[in-house]
Structures are given as structure tokens and as C-alpha cells.
Length: 187
Length: 120
Image (cartoon, rainbow over all chains, first blue to last red; front, side, top):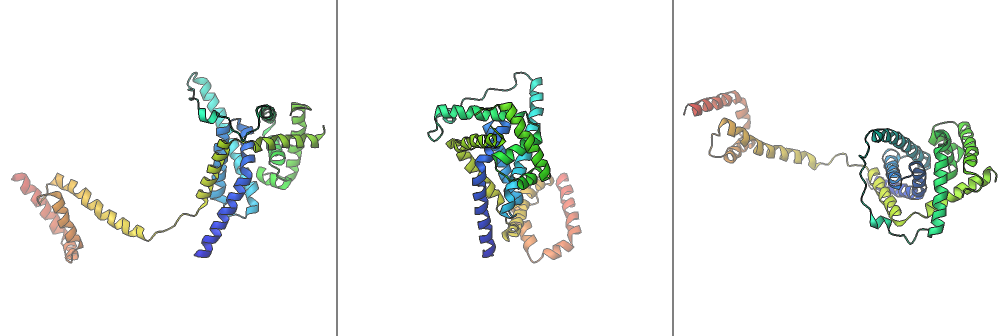
């Protein structure tokens, strides 16, 4: 039916718009958790595909908490797998092969920040990632979703699968602990 | 620095990081987005030509597989292909029902042929 096709097309367009809006921040969050750009990209792509497949037909206003819930779960799975992998690798010394250098990937990108600024930013992000790693998981998720992604308390609660009261508690503790860890002038 | 200042600082660092993504990363994100949109498109549940394709495939499989069986039992005609052409003609012809009714007789005849071939 033509009407149905138009509706499906419109839904695809709005889903693409939504994904374009969240992709950069989603990657940033995944990168803070994995500290590896390629792994982070894989996680974001996986979360996008899962959202599109399973919830693409849901109302658009539900996508944001659903997407971050999926991404949060993918990050948790990745972290569990990483722990197992590092245990296994520790039993097999020298089994990891050096990957060949990718000269194209290392070429300077003119759109990126200048070296000094990039270094400052990179240092600040690294410190933030380090601080977040030291937080309990629920605090880390609350801070990431509330401050970095900009979800409100209700959306964060939906994404984390807990009450709004729990979100407020986790978030408050996360901010205090991070301030202690990063100091007054970390950025 | 109070909690609000710290939150704003963290947000600013993160926003700058996101805004400074390099071209290669942005390109990979675009690819990821397209892959997701492609995955969300509904798959066609049924295509009418599938039934015809299955029937044609079955006939083709009979033509290909049965000569191998004939090689084991010994073909009655000169070549396996000629044998299959005859079989197909029989299956698709008017005498099909009649042949099915007399299937037991043909099975016996087939076994008798094998025995005679073995003697000869």
C-alpha cells in the first residue's frame, strides 16, 4: 500500500535524523568506557542497528532512553568480555600480534583541533575516563547519561532501569567522587 | 568550583571532544547509521515467484541427481540425460496418473532389469 510505504519512509528519515544527532555523543561515551576508538565505533554501530531493528517502529520520543539503554548494555557486555579476554591473554604470553601501521589513519585531519588544543582536550578526556573508571558502575552510568548525554532524570531512570530517586543518589555521589579524583583544575 | 561548575566543565570538555571528531571517524559513524537504517527496513514476507522457483528447482534437481542414481543401477537408455528426458516426459504427460497406479509393476520391472544386466 502506498500510504504504508510513505509512513515507513518517514519513519526511516526521522530515525536517521535521530541517529545523526546522537552518534557523536554516543561514540564519546563508548570511548570513555573502552578507551579504544574502534571498539567504541563497533559498540555504537551495534546499538544503532539493535535500536533500528527492534524499536524503529516505536514513537520517536522513546528512542533516546532506549538507545542509551542498549548502548549501556553493550558497553557492559564489552567490559565483561574484556575482563575474560585479558585473563585468557595473561595465560598466553606473546600471543598478541602487532597490527601493521595504518598510514592513512594517521594522516593529519585539517578539521580536527590544532595540536596544542587537541593535546589539552585529549588529556582532559583521558583524566575524565580514568576518573569514571574508578566509579562504581551505577554512578558512572548516571553521570555519563545525565551530564555528558544530557538526559533528564526521568530518561536516565528509564535507560538505567531504576527509579528517579536512585538516579539522583547515584548522580550526586558520582559528582562528589569525580571532583575528588580530578581536582579543581583538571581541564 | 562547586558541583554545577564541575558539571559544566565536564560537559564542555566532552562537547569539544565530540565536535573535534576526525573525518575518518565521522565517515564510519555515517556508515553505521546507514547500516542501521537498512536494518530497520521491513523485509518482504512473501514473493509470488518463489513458488515457481521452488518447482523449477525441484525439476532441475531431479534432472541433475537422478543420473547419478542411474549410474549405480545401470541406465536403461543410452545416456543418463536421455533417460531423464524420458522420465520428465512421462511425469509431465497425460499418462502420469496411470503410471503412478502401476508403480509397483515398474519397480518390479526395474529390479528385473538389474538382475538381467548382471547376468548379461
